[in-house]
Length: 306
Image (cartoon, rainbow, N blue to C red; front, side):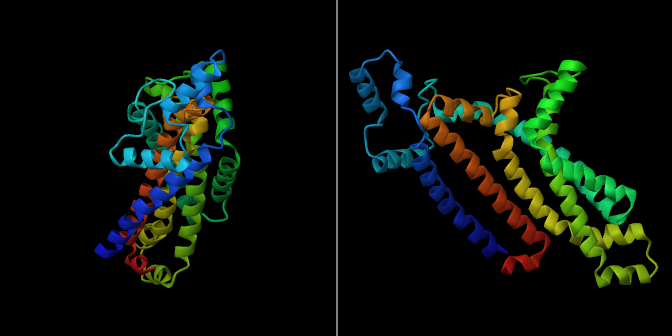
């Protein structure tokens, strides 16, 4: 087990470095000149060129990346062109909001998705199963931003039950977290159902039933643990996906998280903030996925040798 964990952890830095190179190169293809935006449309060409040299944008891309890489190793992701604050400060002020939203959405997806999928499997082909699957298909097929807009229209504009924008109280969190959770909730429910149905066909489940054990005991003691193995994988990947996918939800609800910071940075061509936020998000997703593999290996030791 120790070797498995060591291999997983050893690959992480290589993945993050490769991703940082890809991010750095792709960002340079975004249309617009950050020096011109920062200097203003009335600035002279000489003034823009001076600012470009000050920002290091006049150097070739290899030199720019090397400076970025050395700074990142020391915890310095640069300074925001737009605000003047360091990128680390910008991200640090937004992390609590993004984590709050992500954890709330994740909790909703797990607490509703897993039990719903298991109940649907236990009552397979019944009206309960069909009802759960209909809602799962709707949740998986509907974009989160559309759910967000419909929720705002109903609960904020018409009924006036919940705040429309911003953050601050628990009531501000309800609509964004529900909108963000719908996609993962549907996927977790479908995976839980599929996995539970697969396990219920195994010989040891039939043997347990033949010994006279009740359905509840067979399902909870024998079937559930093995059924949750693939669900754990999906759950871990969904948490990473929620971190990366909160951009649209945060934008619609003006939620002051990392996703909103990224959108604003792209608008102002703020290269350092774009690089820092994307690198932070991707690193978080990679780390969460690796931890998911480790947890999965603990639950199912046979996975360690795959």
